[in-house]
Image 1 (cartoon, rainbow, N blue to C red):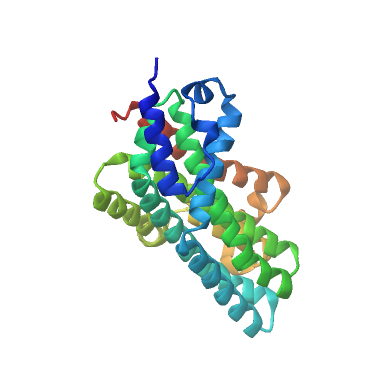
Image 2 (cartoon, rainbow, N blue to C red):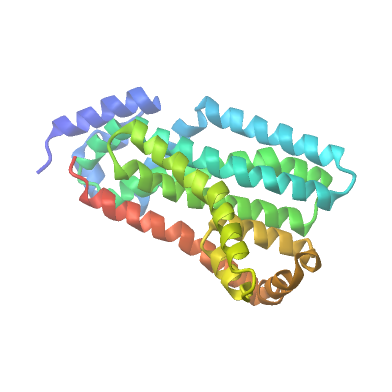
Length: 295
C-alpha cells in the first residue's frame, strides 16, 4: 500500500514546478492507481506540456525559426531555392535544439520524475508523458516558426514535405535525448553526450561518408550509398526533400538510382518506415533503461 506522504510530496513538487493550483486529481493515492492508463498519461502530458510552453526557450526557438524562415523565403526570388536554403538551416538547428533542450529539461525534471516513480504509476507512462510533451511543444514551435512563412511564400507540397521531415527529425532527436539523459545521472555528461550525438549525425557522418566514397571511388557504391543514407536520419530527411525538388539529374547515377527507388510512393513509404524506426528504437531503449533505473 502507498501512504499519503508520497502523494503529498508529488503535490508539493508539482505545485512548485508546474504551477498547478487545482491538484484534486492527485489528492488521493487511489486516484492515481485506479485511473485508466490513457487518462493518466493525458493528465501527466497536460502538466508537462504546460510547463514546457512556459519556458522562454520555446519562445526564442519559435521567433528564431520565424525570423530565419521569413528572411530567407522573402529574399529568394524562387520558392524552390528558398526552401533549399531553409532546408540546410533547419537540418542543423532543429536537431541541435531538440536534443539539447530535451536533455536539459529531463534533468531539470528529475526530482519530479523520481517522486512520480514512487507512486503506483507505470514508469512507461511517466517517460512517455515527458517524451510526448517535448515532441508536441517542439513541433508546435516548428509549425509556427517555419510553417507560417512557408504558407505565405511557398504554399505547395514541397513545403509540407519539408515540415513533415523536419518534424520527424525532431522526434528522432528527442528520442536520442531520452537515451542520453538516462545513460548517466551526471547532467554535464548527459548534455555532452547529446552534443556528440548531434555532431556525429549532422556533421561527422557526412565527412566519414565522403571519405569512404573517395577511398572506394573505383567500385560501384550506389546501393551502399543508399544504405549509408538510411543509417543517418539527417541524411535521410535531406534526401527525401531534395528528391521532391526533382534535381536528381544533378546528382549523377546515384541520384538517378535514388529517384528510381525513393521517388515513388513505395519509396516514400519505405523512407517514412525507416524514419519511424529511428524514432521508435531509441525510445524503446530509453523506456527499457528507465524501467531498470534504481531511484
